[in-house]
Length: 135
Image 1: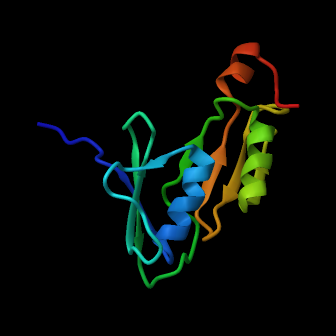
Image 2: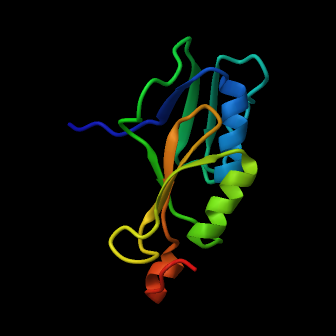
């Protein structure tokens, strides 16, 4: 018998604030009947369709080095660069621009959330299907 991934867990300093930030970025929601509130040490969010879940757990440790695991996000309604701008408007910071990795406009952008956890934003499926690099 094999296992499956129940959810993704992110250690953080403030579970509520970070879960609220990621809810905005991903369009995720609280789990019905289990709302996240200020002061909660564990906050779970999920895709609106009940799919993927992310659990934020408060720990006293701060991030020390580069993440060994991270999210690669693919925009649904915007281009890569528009999604990067959206994330930055929410408080993300650009860590590394690999937008020209492989070829001009083909790569990804590395960002960090408000607590320094890195994630990447890739080109949208529409951009890939069009074969066009990001503007």
